[in-house]
Structure formats: C-alpha cells, structure tokens
Image 1: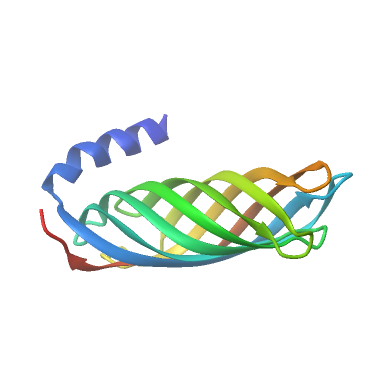
Image 2 (image 1 turned 180 degrees about the horizontal axis):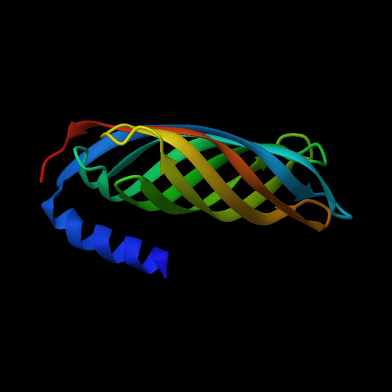
Length: 167
C-alpha cells in the first residue's frame, strides 16, 4: 500500500518539477546465491550512472530513468561487469527504483541477466541524495547450464542532479 501512495504522490507532484539530469553511485554488500548447484554466501553490488527525468531537487521528488555500469560479485566466484537500466521515483526521504541489468561473468565467460528492486532512505533530505539503500536482485547466468544468481544487499547510495535540461 505504501508503494502505491509513494508512486501516486510522486507522479502528481512531478508536474511541478523541471527536466533534470544527474548522476548516481552506490555500493552494497549482503547475502547472495549462485552456482550450480546453488550455494549461499557473501555477495556485493556496486554501480555508477547517469539519470534524467522530471525532478525537483528542493523537495527531492520526481521520476527518472537512468543507465549505468555495475560490478557484481557472488558466492560462487561470480565477478561480472553489468550494464544497468533503472526507472525510479523519489518522494522526500524515500525512493523506489526497479532495474534490469545484463553483462558478462568475467570468471566463467558467460552472459548474465538480472532484474531487481531498490528501496532508498535519505539521511540528508536535500536535493542531493545521501543515504541507505536495500536492494533485492535475481537472475540467471547462462554458462554450460543455467545457474541462478541473486543477492539481498544493504549499502550506501549517493545521487544528485547536476543541471536543468531543456523542456
């Protein structure tokens, strides 16, 4: 229910926002699953990217689409470079984004695809986002067999609009 309220409020409020562009960076660590057979262990997740959307930095609200580069590690020796696409919404101190990512496992030499969800909580409620982020991601690695990959992670996130773009 809170997600419906968040999305509905941010969509209505984004009519007051300007078209903006910005950047993000985040790093997470947590519990991951991977391998064949699947094993559980430590996993990490980090990414940097750029975003664009209707955003009001004074109230930290709006919708955005972003693209970035990421690095994933997993319990079975997974080390993957990823291209990530995000679609998100921020409302004051809370943010929610969905993402899809595709890349290459550098260790196994196999393609990898993931989808996921991130929930952010702002520590500093200004136009710049500095805070905590919880991410849930899952997908598959397409090596000799299809292997599950995934992670539940907690980490730090930073994002900021850097300029107003044309309307």
